[in-house]
Image (cartoon, rainbow, N blue to C red):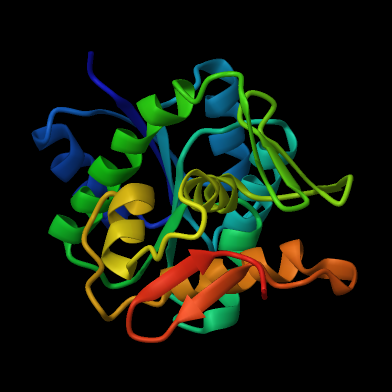
Length: 229
């Protein structure tokens, strides 16, 4: 079954390039020239993935992302931005985007990101209705809910997947390559800091209110879920 990809961007040249490239790869492509139009398209027929530009008139990409996630949408979001500042990437990820690309970008890399995000979708749907526990953390895979010390921790879709991976492998060192392959579906290039950004955001949320650190950094090896003792 062909996947449908929605492109929300006000740059006609970008839309034209992406439409041709995605169609050539066998995807059905729908486009919108601003955020408001894109949100209407999503309501009319839910796509399998959204390619979302940040800087747009009427409703910008950050607001589109926020409304989608607050509305309960789990559609994968790949954000496009001309801004290379870390704070803009962090803001998009924190609002619930699954990945990002900085303009200008190579079409081949964009297609690889799309394939990776679409590969993750079946695994999310097959998560099951069981719970994982470690220390004072409870991860409900069916409700997509995380509790620590009895308090709910609000996580984005990607943060939830990352914690889920750690919870399935407690006290085991997970390399950067393994995490990138499992969560993003492509090999860690050594150039993108997306993993470090997500680890930092996940730690901040999980350690709020003075809670102890459970996700430890093993220098030169990766990360591990374990207590301080």
